[in-house]
Image 1 (tube, rainbow, N blue to C red):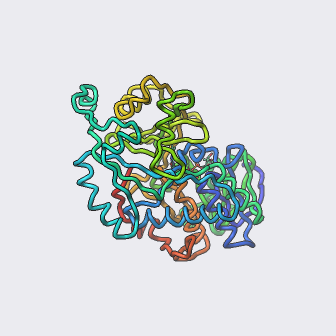
Image 2 (tube, rainbow, N blue to C red):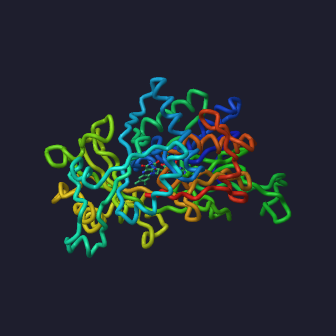
Image 3 (cartoon, rainbow, N blue to C red):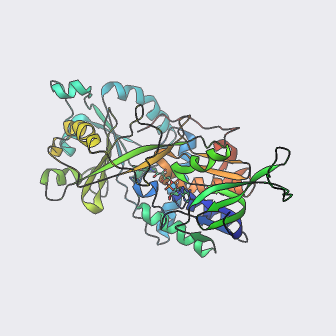
Length: 434
Ligand SMILES: Cc1cc2nc3c(=O)[nH]c(=O)nc-3n(C[C@H](O)[C@H](O)[C@H](O)COP(=O)(O)OP(=O)(O)OC[C@H]3O[C@@H](n4cnc5c(N)ncnc54)[C@H](O)[C@@H]3O)c2cc1C
């Protein structure tokens, strides 16, 4: 048994974007509470948060997703207006479709237009001109073998872009500390402490006839007692919860990014700095028709990032090392082969950098999970959109902590806490997935 470290009202495990946003909003709502964040790494946001592509969009079919992303992005814009630099760049999302795919998505786009969510339609010929895109792959044997469709249309979503994830995480860390919150880095949660509500001091406790709950955390620096433990340990949450018989309903799936340097390659620079889509004067975040490989303009480093979220065949598991490794063959035989057919400018390009992280995926409806069980609040399952939804998720988790039925999101919109819970979950399915 480790030594007793301290007592807190709330201990949050994990200083990723979700843990820190939750910690900040809990402390903001409960200024008198002693709130501690523990993180096994040496700084904030070094887990999957640091691996993110840092993209956001305020364009979802699901009202759940839209509320989470819309209010979070509004909050980030508000921070920027107050002088907190988050490096938001409105590059837009460009979704590419063949004629059949476009026909299927048209009713969804019409519904969204009626709700006031804007998009702009591009013809293939315009995209060929503006991006140097190869839209017609017919007659290309390799493309046919891979089943790559032509591009007939592109849908540009202007209310979308990229954000400096590190700056966002630093904001939550600083704001939480300024309110008097505490953070212990290099501190690993080893086990959640399940204890009787009324301990009798008898060896062998807890017995089946005792009421039990989670009362704290055993860490690498000793025991920490807390009235409430918040598990925001991202893709590793199940490792703390499974041993005590709790399910978190999301699991890790490896995701990889490969960065191609454009500088010094005129054709690629032309693509990166393609005009006519946004005020940044660059290519939008571009999503190919099938498979949905995406290309991100990484303007600060003069590079284009490539990725794809593979599902069947990609296990739900984490690698033994803390840092998952990118797979060179995933780029070489996968991403590259697809992307170079549409963007011949990529011919011969090899990544100068690559990294991997995890989506914490809830395979049931792919939306975040926020619920309480036996004294533990579980916050996670944001898949590939935890950055763009972090503020709303933090506010909903804080409302749950404070015993409120409704969370007030930024801008005043309310959100029923139980809608993202397990027992009375109510989320609207998404029809626009990458
Ligand atoms: C390749 C990739 C691209 C992505 N792109 C986007 C995007 O464009 N837009 C977007 O919105 N989202 C994106 N995401 C998703 C986004 O990054 C995540 O949803 C978000 O970062 C999740 O935050 P988190 O705080 O839950 O997890 P994490 O950042 O992983 O935080 C969990 C923290 O808990 C710590 N921890 C775990 N176990 C313990 C323990 N036992 N004790 C102490 N500490 C512990 C970890 O070290 C970690 O720091 C992407 C993710 C990946 C991997």
